[in-house]
Length: 152
Image 1 (tube, rainbow, N blue to C red):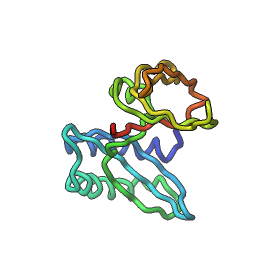
Image 2: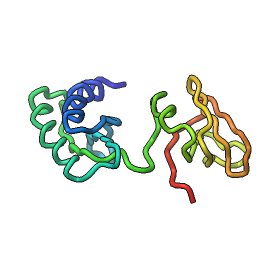
Image 3: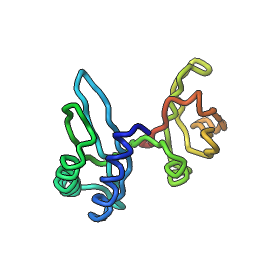
């Protein structure tokens, strides 16, 4: 985890939890020449725009005071989303059995995206049961990302 993400996560977690939400993720990324600081939150039953606004208003002055980012950036607070990325071991455990899309760095059998139900996660190794019923496993270095996916 980079230093900015680590500092912002530490500042954001108590703010988010005080508003009855969970801190899902923090990212600090450069897109189209501009830096973005994004705080993703979650809540049982879903996140509202009011939740995002409350977290943003409470966290913004703490970020100004701590000043962990040297360059200018755009600050955003949003819901983790229905098709959120699974990154931490706890994310995989929480969504075991859920329908997911596993993106691979290199195509396997001519495809780079595998859809199926999450059947296992062990030390970076992701196992899914595909729509055809086949059990497929991929080691961490093969996996570009895993996201929840709405079932068709």
